[in-house]
Image 1 (cartoon, rainbow, N blue to C red):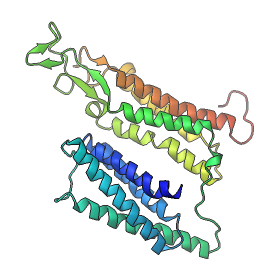
Image 2: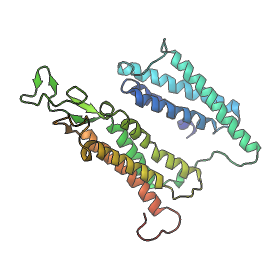
Image 3: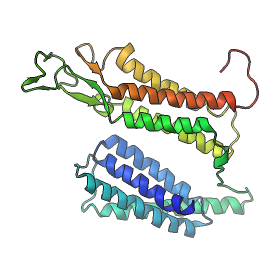
Image 4: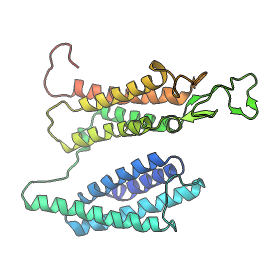
Length: 285
């Protein structure tokens, strides 16, 4: 487990970020921000700033290295700005890992010296199957963002194909297939944020935090909002692009994204209903 957390996790997440670098700028930025939080939490697994900094060297090296390796392997143009030469990114990730790891280790040491008990312990045995349903829903929703969500009548306009397609069917002034990132300007960011809800819930449960509400309620609401946003921006309020959009078709990515949002909703709902503290009045979830 120690090898997995210290080595495999930053390497795998770096590989994901390296792939996102050539796909979408927003997704890449969100993923790197999550990596910052991960670097601090990794440092909190160690006693003192020195040990945390050493953990940061390992994690930062693997994270930055696999970003560059996967980006070069895909051969796609970077959607976000990279330092020149690109190897400087490795220096930034290692330096950031050292700082974040040292801060996390130092925070743990201070809490221990203050007699606040064990500051960072995770018990994965506290997780139940609804949490894993939420994980799967987050993966489904996140993956769906890269699939086509909508398409116009024509695949292309020069010449119009297929024959007799509606040349006035345009989305954002062009024809073809559109992923969630190509369709929306803000909602895609909100959906990415929704994907983090099951993991936040799992962290709270595994840490044994005491809440004033039943664990799972917020995740349920997040999944509900994500599903509502998808339904509103595609079916209830019509297709994206405004009143001028005609013959816009729903593609599989839209349906898959809706399924993922409802899986997040179901995970939170089942968690708070079956494993929440105390009984509730009739008619209350």
